Length: 173
Image (cartoon, rainbow, N blue to C red; front, side, top):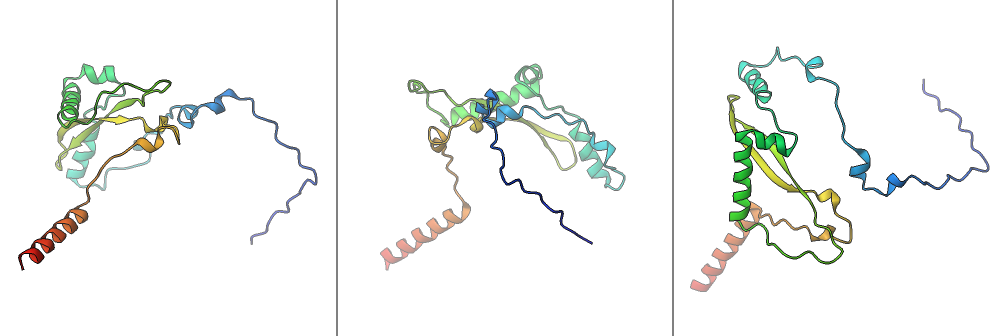
């Protein structure tokens, strides 16, 4: 049986004291800090019911360690090659232009994200590195609206081609 607790209301609630904590002026990503997990998945999961191919896949996930920082990545030749491929691809695609930063402005930082790509049989297909912007450092109203990433959807391409074919058909008839 469910019963609601009676709530005692104070007729004169005290106002909360103003916060003097200087850490509240920091962005939320800096205030939260890094989280650490002390629970191992092996304590809660069993792989006994998995097929042999899935067991092989799970085992391969631990075979290559993902670097936590740049010095670790640079020490491994595979990760170094992945970073070089990413930088060459960004350069070849003309991803950015070097410009002078306006006065009193700070550039948005970036970091490398490392991923291990795995084949269906569980073997390592390739090591992949991606350079990503630290968008969480942007300030709304200052540089937040400047982010633009054009993406073409297949439905839009199909619509454009069908309209183009329709126009050609109308012009030739």
